[in-house]
Amino acid sequence: MSPGVQPRDLFDLVPCGLISATTRGDITTANDTFLAMVGRMRDQVVGQHLTAVLAPGSRLYFETGFLQQLSAHGRASEVAFDLQLADGKTLSVFVNAVVDADRDGGTLLLAVFDATVRRHYERELLAARRVAERSETRVRILQTATTAFGAAASEGEVTEALAEAVRGATDATVVSVHLRAPDGSFTARATAGAPRPLAETALLAWLDEGAEAAATGSTSPSGGTQVLPNSAELRMRFPSAVAELRAARIEALAIVPLIDDGATGGVILLSFGRPRRLDAQTVDLLDSLAEQSVLVLQRLRLRELISYRSLHDTLTGLPNRLSLQLRLDHLLTETRPSQQAVALLFIDLDGFKSVNDRFGHLAGDTALRRISTSLHQAVRSGDMVGRLGGDEFLLICEDADEQSLADIAERLRSAVRNTPLEEGLHVSASVGVSIHRPDSSREKPTAEALITLADEAMYQSKRAGKDRATIVVA
Image (cartoon, rainbow, N blue to C red; front, side, top):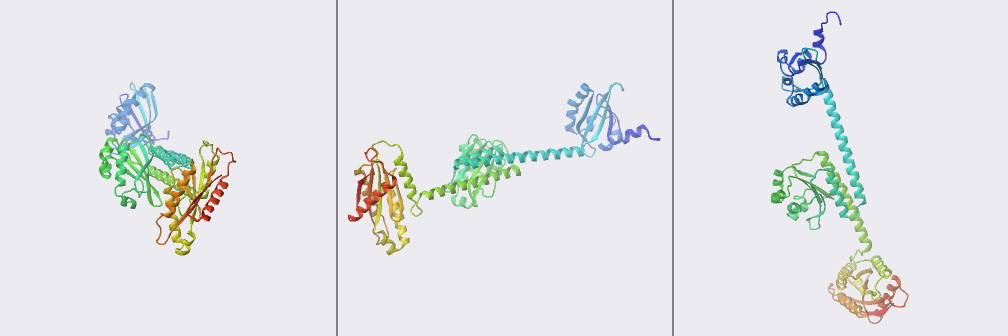
């Protein structure tokens, strides 16, 4: 000890608060450092119970846990407390304490350390850990959703994966995905959780109100994710659905729009059974999932469009040559009952070249579209009529005898003759029919051979005067 430095000086000047108290918790001494911590005079501290300098939240633990720990073990280390300061603020501290059983029948000796910096660091560390955990969760949810989206082969599979991902990203009671139909209404496509059909119907009815307004986005959530965190806001937003929402015990709702090329192509509805707010990170995650799903839906629709166009005639919308070829190949190679025949009706429009020459190709295209519609309406259910190209069409018939085929050929010729066309246009059709019976002793023909035979029969009709049918058996 340096000359002139008294023990009392050391007690008062050490950089931590020092307190002694009875085993009941009454303060007997306190150094200047501790008095400075709490901002009180010595006579305001000494003689008071230790709980008098503790914040309310710390008093309960002091009485129910801390004193019992000292009684059982005789010491405690780095126990966190909050001191109640004279100005009403609190100070975070760590307390080390021992019981000196030999002093005055038992004395508590406490060392009090300012924990402001450490507690601040711990809070920052905890916050950083939570951010990291949330980032990890976000990445995991996005990766899982991306994998599911990548494997999806239909709109249904995409929306199911989306509903599951959204529910995994929140604690929503129910998540439902609804896509906008061509008429502007919303159609349910997937649900995660126990469905609330009445409530969803009421909500969608509200969203469907005013088809024109919905199409422009004024009644649809096209501005981003909207959160209605409590029943009061739900009543304001959906006044006509209050009863259904109450019956379904929905206390909060989130609406995530699926924006497709600037328009609302669908919505995700998140229903909560209690008041619920979504933080910015969760909303951002929901928006990301929605954007991903829209891209996948666009890809699937494009693929479907490409597939459709590869099998259909662009002018008339009828199946094209490739589609007809695939259907015919299937019929000729599959195992079929022996009594079922396969027949082709080759249809060629009589004098159609003069239509293009006299009235132009635009009028010719219009005539082809109208005639295609007439042919499609004239065939039996299950039969396929398509356009081979130009003014040639082909009808594939199953299970038809010669008389039935003659009747069908007559309907086709009548349909062409009676198709309403521009004034001055008159079109008829020559039909050639080829039939293959699986039970015949002849060798099974190829699809191309059967088409060629029907084509030759059609030319026989042409040579015989046009607007008639000729039937041949393969």
